[in-house]
Image (cartoon, rainbow, N blue to C red; front, top):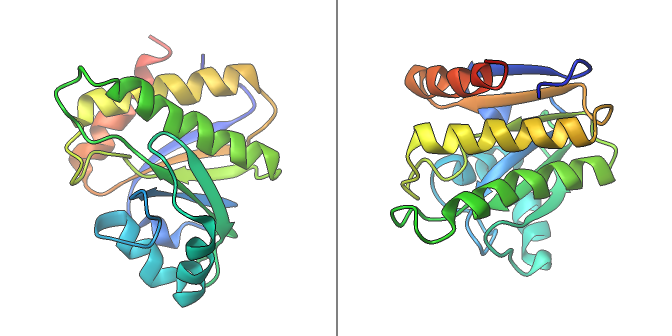
Length: 176
C-alpha cells in the first residue's frame, strides 16, 4: 500500500518549522486559532493567517480548507477539523479518515507535492494515539495508492518520541 514514488517520514518536532509545500493544521471548527498545534501555527504564521481564516467561515469536522502560509516556511496551511473522541461509536474513525482524505485532496488540487501532518485529534480531542495512527497510515496509504504520482513526501510530525514510535509502527504495519 505504500507508494514507490512517495517518501514517508515520521519525525518528532515542530510542524511550524517544516519547509514542505503544505503543513496541516489540526484546527477547531472556527479556524480562528486555539491551543496546541492550532495555536502554534497561528502564532508562527502571523496575523495575516487569522485574517484569511476569518474569510473562510469555519470548517466542519472531517473537512479541510487551505490558506497561504504567510510567515511559515510552508507555502500553505491546510486546516482540518478532527473529531473529538467519544469512545469510538460516534463515527470518529470515518471522520478522522476524512480529515486526511480532504487534506490530501486539497493538496492535489493545488499541485502541492509535499505535506506534513500532525497527529490529528490526539491532543485535547482525546483520540487514542494508537487508533489515530492506524487511521492516518491506512488512509494516507489508500490515497497514495489511488493517486500514486501526486506526492513526493508525506511527513508525520509528532509532538513527542512516544507518538513518533506509535506512528512509525502504524506506517510499518502497512507493509507487514
